[in-house]
Length: 523
Image (cartoon, rainbow, N blue to C red):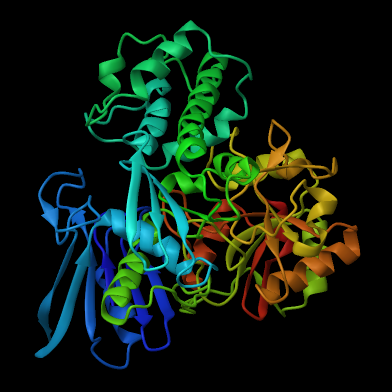
């Protein structure tokens, strides 16, 4: 049983004898605030899934202040070699068990290695790029790790700082950034103009990227021409694109020089959620393959430390896992006033979606990681810009934010320039189908999720029914959550949200709940 302290708190259960992930419970899910630390309810739920006290308790290394280098929690934040793990004993309810901890840095590396499809002993390169780490590594056939070099200190924090710099509403004290800002910068880069950086852009790139300044602060850039300029100002979106390109180019230049053996590349850390950078890594052709886990950010750290512990005690560092290994849905009290209830019929739901209804979609367990992948989703038809605008209103999000599509895997090449499955929604691609207005970003791209029958049979059947009616096996797919919280995971919260946000109905497993027409017409 493995724990990730600090923000993005997670508890993971791993059966080492079967080398299989039992669950990964993220503290924010069940409508807790985004990036929550581990909650008592998560601990109780996770413990209740185990039939005995675990043999090993593992804790991902961290920092007590959440600033790396400050007082460590367990093995601490940084490190790969001597001193980067703690092995001992502890007592749980009177039973002696093994205790294991390794650094946060190692949690990223072993999480991506353990979850990757490559066989045990296949040499791999690894890239960890996140808020505070920007480094390459090599894992050899004996599972020995070599540090190949640091490219940029704190690339993720520098990327997120851009939004804070331009946003007049950002007033956090020195050393604090908003976790959600990096995703907004990714959306705004699409509005930026291509070309060489101008003098102001180059000056900021020269100041920011090579520096080891920490903690980062907006106020150190008070004299910048971008200070409080507004995040949608063209001058800022141009800057965002230029800095994004400069960050990637720095890592790419290092990789071309030092990663020359053609091994597959493992990507982990929060920057692994940047779909443009992921696409560009695939296109470099430096690597035989590229793997990014769905929980590439800190939501994968508990799994990574569990894999590291399994490697220590058994010599094995590969696990079987399923992306739908989160919390099961809680069907508590549901006020059925205003609801019409039907057995789930995929054709019925497809017809509702084609009639411009917006439907919440719940099946089975939560997804692991931050992306809604068809078990805690809001679905809609993909054809109208008005649908895009409505979904952003429902989500209480800025109008510049894109809406992602979900697509039948076998049809993806009909609609997007994507030549491989993308089951975890981690790649940008050009949209080829002009009908898909709701999911086409300003630069003509989308962040598609592909779905097969084996991966998610319920969503696959719905997409198949929608295709039969519309000719297109694509839907809008965005996460089912209150603004600022993790995924909704109980029926009462889903009903409260659906009423407040203006959903037309929702599905829970094998039942469809539609609001009565009189209610829907008033929204």
